[in-house]
Image (cartoon, rainbow, N blue to C red):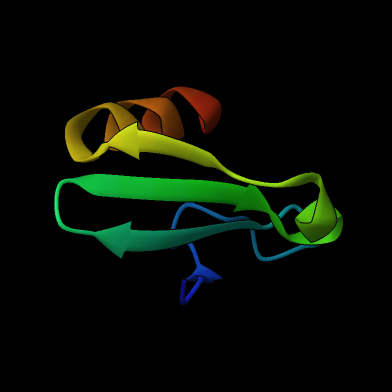
Length: 54
């Protein structure tokens, strides 16, 4: 899986990384990569990230 820093991440050290696959968005914490990741259907992943930044 190819993760990249999410555009929703703050410019400080609060980084979230995302990886996309057909129909799925996968999210992980940059500081805790070894803890795993959370896969979501694409629309639910976007809603999750939007909720986090509010």
